[in-house]
Length: 184
Image (tube, rainbow, N blue to C red):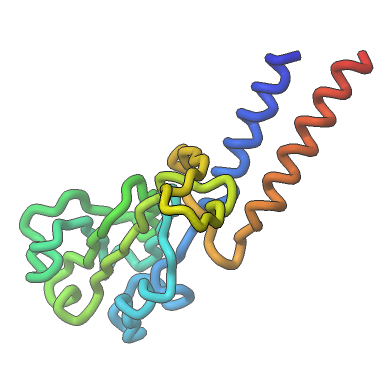
């Protein structure tokens, strides 16, 4: 019985984590280009990137590429020693750590023309309170139970489920599993 519950919980954690990852097409319908005058800085500022999200660079490989670079290389459009280079025209990059990720097109003149991208992946929340802190009139510090977030990326605002609805679903599943095992 305990093994079934552990397996069910593990499956739920994996499914919740996968359902929160998003795929972003860089430049939306214009893609990765210099022709459409896409403001990639503006494009990135309208998104909230999380660990596990994927950014998709779609472009004509005859005219463009994607280079992942350091901040210094990004600022100066220096393509002499990129971290990695992508050339297929349909390149997916999964964001695996928080902080800034820098990309640009390594074709001469393209970076200087604005074909560059700085993505900021937000730092995952370390702890989530189980309840609101107690209201106290005394000077003693409040005591709130904290649980680690397990490194699961947060949902994008358009796909966010409330914590209470997720908790209710988990409790409901656990109760049904427990009662199913007692009935058999």
